[in-house]
Length: 184
Image 1 (cartoon, rainbow, N blue to C red):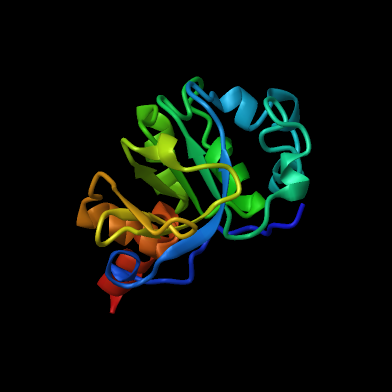
Image 2 (image 1 turned 90 degrees about the vertical axis):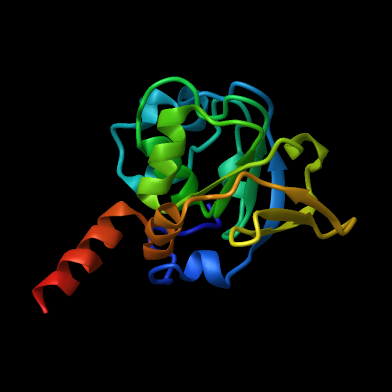
């Protein structure tokens, strides 16, 4: 595994929607990628670093040894279908994946991504992005730029509240900061 636990983005508040771009190499997967292929069930008994070594083994064995910190997954429709296991986005994040771009997401997977601080980016034209290309995601502008071709694709805008959660590195960090601020 070339990645590391990326649970905290290192950004605060609305920062993720105000300035940072997410840039990375693309790994393409198809439609209906379910959580059982993202993190196969037999690895759920292990700790997160071990789980990260096996992400996507159910569909692309060896993926975890090739993915690098900052890489981006591109999927088709209904990405993250299946069980409600939060370990799927956590495992991707721990392997180094910074964002998932898809035509559409399973509702629970989308919410779990937000909760752990992994950017879910809905883009109707995700199919235009090819394996190995580099992309730049601007969550504030609602765009994905394919850096190799300079083509700009529109995304579904994220509400500011989701930007705050992603900017904090996930729901746990967001709530900890919010409650710490209430005590001062």
